[in-house]
Length: 211
Image (tube, rainbow, N blue to C red):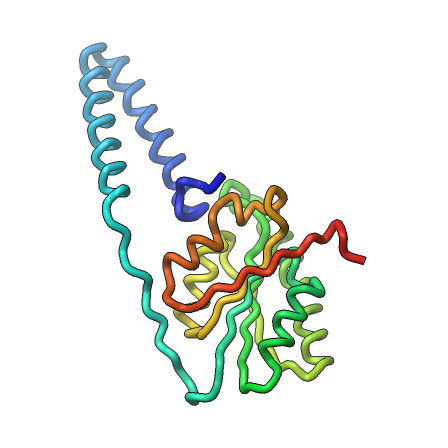
């Protein structure tokens, strides 16, 4: 099922707002029961208004301007646990053949916003950096020059940051299969296709079947 939120950051903000609204209702009820009812009604009306605004017409996809020579293609690759998989490396190699291509590989750290206050974030970023370094070394060994960076914890924000920095002509997103992919459940691939007017390719990698 696709997440109703556009990103993990949006879901986290919704959680904080919900907790704050509940606390406000409780405090108002302690002061006066009817005041609590009034606060609840006002907050419910505000939530309904926001929901109706969200269901309005979607904004058109953001245009990504081509930069660099006309014959050069810029490919943005987004992957984490699957970043070193054969399927993704093959997709990169195919795009490097017969054309001038620049690659930027971004690996969003695998952790949640709730863990950003703990050392878990550092461990996740370190693991993402290690996978990224191994992939860049492999690409270099077969003659493909690629740059890389560890992206935001939220994959859609990581994509957005990389698009604004790199100006890709194509985005390649690698995920686990349907039913095993947290990114697919959260609508990362669909979200990228809605946000930007460049082709978005989806590479599915089943690590359980990998040799």
